[in-house]
Amino acid sequence: MTAALRPRLLPLCALCLAVLAAGDAAPGAAATGEVVDLTKLRVCADPGNLPYSNDKGEGFENKIAELIAADLGVPLEYTWFPQTVGFVRMTLAARRCDLIIGVATTNELMQNTNPYYRSGYVIVHRPELTVTQARLDDPVFKDLRLGLQPRTPVATLAARYDLLKRAKSYPLIVDTRLVKPARDMVQDVAKGEIDAALAWGPLAGYWVKELAPDLVITPLAADPGHERLDFRVSMGIRYNEPDWKHRLNGLLEQHKAEIQQILAGYGVPLLDEQGRLIQQAGADPDDAATAGQPVPEPAGYRLGDYRAAVPAGLTGARTVDLAGLQALLGKEDPLLVDVMPTQPKPANRPVDAIWRDPERETIKGAVWLANMGYGKLPEAEETAFKDELLRRAGSLDRPIVVFCEPQCWMSWNAAKRALAYGFRNIIWFPGGAAAWREAGLEAETVTPWRP
Image 1 (tube, rainbow, N blue to C red):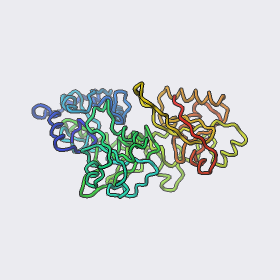
Image 2 (image 1 turned 30 degrees about the horizontal axis):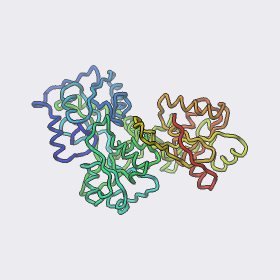
Image 3 (image 1 turned 90 degrees about the horizontal axis):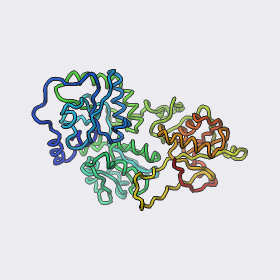
Image 4 (image 1 turned 120 degrees about the horizontal axis):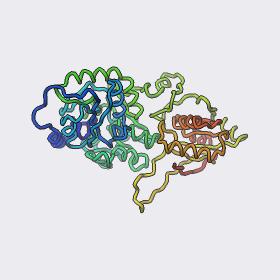
């Protein structure tokens, strides 16, 4: 395995390993003595590799680096280099920086800290596909069009179970600034071009959250005796720096809960020591729902895993069921706002390329303000959403009904956001368009408004 190409991922073929190791090996023997600059936290990172890192500080490794720098009381400084051949040699080994935030614990090009999370491969699929065993020997996979990357453990298993005939291959060795295979797989599942994607959990979780929160992520079960499907991730430092390693290990233990919350906010599926999916209570209150308890309202917006159990209500808003919504429509004139997410319009699309907006069957008379329920919105989208609500409502006092689908935090977030904008008559309809359609009530097909 090499941290240069995919430090969080998986063992590559022997040929790839040899090539990448040769490209990353530092000239000469390892240096002795510690050369860490303790006046600042110098991090080696990729400038365009979300969800891990980018030069805007938007990745979860950026957030973890900020957490560590704050604890150390020193400024954070980056050395940017694409995670391709030569990454370690040109950054950490060249002493231009002192820390790589995410590397596999099996990496041989550097010394590892203690692992701070464990994740694995997952199946990304649409809700209508039932995956009973989450194992690739499940007969359900025989007839599916699968997306996968060659020379990964899941590709090896797919070959073992004769699943490659209908599979679509996505590149493994890429320039992450330009090509994002996991994103492409998730988009293709959402569009129906493939039935399911077999992807590395942190990448799959992030892109599902960003592009298609209605998709389902199912962790692949262990396949004893065959390929390993989950891996531990640590931080990478130079060899012969025991004091630096000891200090980092202490910080990782001290901030374990905060780091897990950061990871969960990016949709990273975290596994415990037995390889079981952790109920990420640090990021959301779903463990309460699992235990049969009411789901509490979070203090802020929901930041990930948007299709999950929701609170019974929203402070400051009215909450209605189907009968309540029908009664409301009979005596008031509410604005109906569907915020179900959809795929973004592709950026940098060729001028002559045909783009057809997705369609959605929703409550008759509703406007589809797609993607406005994410936990974080760019400032321009915040402004556009507020302006569009006011334009359509006509005043801050008009009733506005916000919904998407059952167990959809997008609608809860969007309703909370509308309250923050100053709208005084917000109604949350947790049943969403599905409850309306299932009751046989009048619906219509719409396309999304885009800011």
